[in-house]
Structure formats: structure tokens, C-alpha cells
Image 1 (cartoon, rainbow, N blue to C red):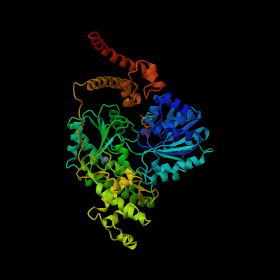
Image 2 (cartoon, rainbow, N blue to C red):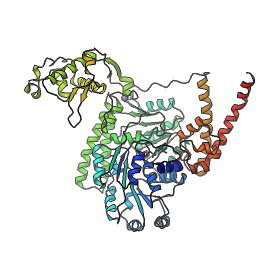
Image 3 (cartoon, helix red, strand yellow):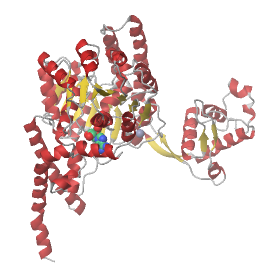
Image 4 (cartoon, rainbow, N blue to C red):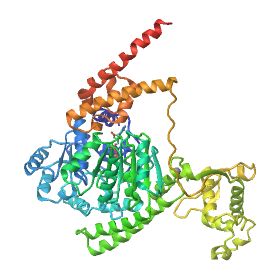
Length: 630
Ligand code: ADP
Ligand code: ZN
């Protein structure tokens, strides 16, 4: 642990691990396989980069996209780590050069695309290299149930099987339902992997679904209210990208575009304009974004509904990676469903790697996933709850940070309903019976089905005492009472409802039970945030901090363009904020700032601490004046 922390500090400039990281690293160092399911921004990369730095030899990282690899390798080199990539973007000579150096053990990490694994030159290299570990990034690509099935991911176990010695394998993904998780472990041949899901919730993201008459107007309205904020507008088709981008530019927004129909050169330029903050709005198809870890994306607008919740959450999740509050808006229309059906069909039929059987089964699966997406888009329930449930979590029914929670919910008093429900469970217990929440709700609602009348449950005194409340709503109240501890749900696949420890507070002490409940189905946009009141002390400090922040940002831009790297590879926004708060004036203090490792301190420490010193000096005359007046 000590050693791991030292490596974390030296290369990445952080002083503690985030949830899950340390355990994953230890297991890998211990030679075990790992399956890590962690949301975007959770810090997956460090989980395999640190073992790579600590183990003898070279770690192989399998990654699906060139942009993703380039980005990672460039970030690592900035941090002083010997990393390299091997793919078709290099010339033949460039590839030979990398192979020679890799064979000589020059790199701690080597990134490759899955298509390369079974090629002769790579197999030859692998046999000459000391492979410390293998990492499979975006591991959901191996599953047909994932949103991004890539047949070449099935080559990975074949490649591993041909190695003389099998190194530990770690697999990572941001989005995986239980089905996909099972596929990853099974298809990649992981050996009793240590599996960790750190939870999917991204608390800083605000989710909203709107059904506007005019999507263009709605988009403009949002952008006008958030000038200067950087964000992505995702569209379903190239044509929509062209139209939306042109319309935004005509209105004076600094927008650019990205889709597969543009030349490589234009795509590269536009992407760079966005990464380097020269353009604030990127209008794009889903071809844009995988592996772009720009940390200061303040919003993601979906102009069209995506084809499934995995894609939606991954794309929307590109907002707010640095932990700052960010907005995820989905503009839904019925037309989007048809567009998606068409796109699904086209992509499956156009994929020549697939056999007819796989095609048929993919088609059915995609239709099922699309249905869940439509369900999300039209739901009046908490949006965050919908997403998290989809990924197998048990979130509360109210998050307070989505358009449905803010617009559609009201607090209702369900004390009376709660007493009725608890007495029903109590009566059932007297008969030594317990049931799942639906049956309990049906009894209360007075339903007359086989299960109920067949077992004489209609003779209970609580039978039918909630005839006016829909079963679904009774179930909701039962779940709420379980969360409050007044009822208890057993574990297992078919949980049954029993009395909770504190049930008597409700039945005997008449405790008031409040619950958030859906009010109406038209979602609202988020109300604008309140500005700071001018003139008060906190606001002045905040203004001074902003001033320094802007100066640091300008410095970062300058250094980044000199080095020809994106600004966030110099430092993330979070690191700049930390500098503003900590005001380091020398290298030693600068090293303590989260996100500053040894190498970055050497490269950028002086420039940033100089800027801080200038900022402090500007304050000095004022402070001296204040002292003199005392
Ligand atoms: P993921 O691949 O899971 O989306 P990344 O690996 O890109 O996430 O990490 C997201 C951000 O979090 C990066 O800026 C990274 O430097 C930062 N980060 C990772 N681990 C830590 C840590 N232990 N402490 C502070 N920041 C961290
Ligand atoms: Zn919510």
C-alpha cells in the first residue's frame, strides 16, 4: 500500500486512492484477474497504470479506438511514464521501430488495438516480450449485449491462450448490466476474477428529458443561458449534425462538428478546436467522444434519443468528469424511435463480420434495449433512479437532481396508507405467511386472483382496505417504508416483505410518513442558478479567486499550445481550482496540489507558482493600507 501510494504521488500527483482503486491494484500485483465496473471519471486508468509501473516488464493495454490510445499515451508521457501505442496510424517504419523498442523492454505500457493481437508480427513480439499484465479497456465491447459489440474482442482469449505464460488480466468498463458483466468474465476467460462495481451514480450530473416542439429553439435557449460553457450536442445522423451546427454558427455560437462523413483532416482539426477550447460547442454523431477525456465538458445535449441506455449514459457521462456540476439534456420526440430502428438495421446489415444467426439475435437484443431507452425518455419517475435501476442498483425513488424530481414531484403525507400496509403485513405474520410486495399490494387493493382467493387471503381484515389506491402506488409506498426501516425486504431473487424493526412507530405512535410522489407528467427545465449577491465579502473573495483562476487558465492554454497538447493534459480544472485554494508559492508547496506529480512540477511548477505570487503581490498594497488605518 505504501509503495502504491508513492507511485500514485510521484506520477499522478494524488495523495489518496479513490474507491476501488487500491484493491484492484493489489489484486493485480498479486497475480489475480480483475473485472472493474466503474463509471466514467471514476479513475479506471490508474487501476492498471500503477500495476504496470510497479511490475517487471511491459503491460499490454487493449483498447478499441485510436483516439483513445493516443489520448492515454500522450497523458502518460506528460506524467513521465514510458508508454507507447502500436496501431495502423503509424507508418510501417514507425511500427517496426515501436516493435524493436518494445522487444527491448523499453515501455512500461504498450497500447494495441484488438485487431492486431493475432497478426504474425505481434505474436512474434509477444513471444519475445516480458508481459507483466494484460488490460482490456472498454471490455463491454466483447458482449453482444453491450452497446458496442466488436467481434475482434473475441480474439483476446485466443491471443492469451497462445502465450507461454498467462499474465493477470484486468478488464474495465463504465457501463455493464449483469448480462454484460457475465459475458465479459466468460468470453474473455477471466479466472475467478475479483469483481468490483463502484456504483454508477454520478451525483454531479443533472438529468433532464424534454419533449420540445422545436428542438432547435430549445437548444439555443440552453446555449444562450450558458454562454462560455463548453459542451457537446449529440445528433443521430450526419445530416442533423450539419443542420444543427450551421444553425448554431449562424446565431453566433462557437460551434464545430464531427461525424464519419468528414475528412480525417477536418475531423482532427475540429476535435482539436474543441479540446483546446477554441470552439465551445461540439455538434457530433456518436462517432465523437470515445476516449476523449476532456474534463471540463459542462453539458451534453442529446438532440435525438440514442438507441439504448448504455450509449446514453456513456455519452451523457462525458459531462462533468472533473466533478463539477454539469447538465445532461435529452430532447425526445417519437420520430427518434423510428430513426433508431433504421440505424440499428443498417448497422447490423452492414456488418459483414456477422453470421445470419448473430444478426438475428443482435436485432432482437437491440430492439429490447431500445424499448428500455424509450421507457426512460417517457417516464415521469426520477430519471436517475431509472438509469441506476437499469444497471442493477437499488436507488431511492427520488434524487432531487433531475427534471422529473424538480418538476414533477410533490411531498405527500402517506401516514394513513403506511398504517394500513403495515397492519396488513402484521396480519399476514399472524398467519405465518409472508409475500412479495406485489401480492401484499394486491391484497390491500382487494384483487381477486387465484393466488389470493386460493389461499384464503381475501378473508384477511385488511383485504381491500386500499381499493382507491393503484397497486403500483401501494408498491411505491411499501418500497419507501422498506427504506425507512419500518418494513423489511428479505434478500434473494424473490424478496418477501416482513415487519421492520421500527414498525410500531407508525402503527402505535402515529409517526407521520412523508414521501415524494409524482405530480404530473410534463417535465420542466432546471431553474437557473442564483447569482452571487454583489458586494458581500464571500462574493469578493470568490471574484478574486475567479480572477486567479482565469489567469491560471490562460497560462495553461499558453503552455498547452506551446507543447501542442490539449489544455487538460497540462492540468485538469480541478487542479487549477486547488491551486486557487492552496496558493502554492514554491515547488515544494506546488507538489502538494492534487494532480501535480514530480514531472509536472519540474515542467510547470515555476510558471504556475510565479502566477500565484503575482496574484498575492497584487493584494499586498491593499492589505498594508488596511493595516496602516488600524
Ligand atoms: P475513467 O477512465 O474511469 O473514466 P480516468 O482514469 O480518466 O477515469 O480518471 C478521471 C479523472 O480522475 C482523471 O483526471 C484522473 O487523473 C483523476 N483521478 C484518478 N484517480 C484519482 C485519485 N486517486 N485522486 C484524484 N484524482 C484521480
Ligand atoms: Zn431524480
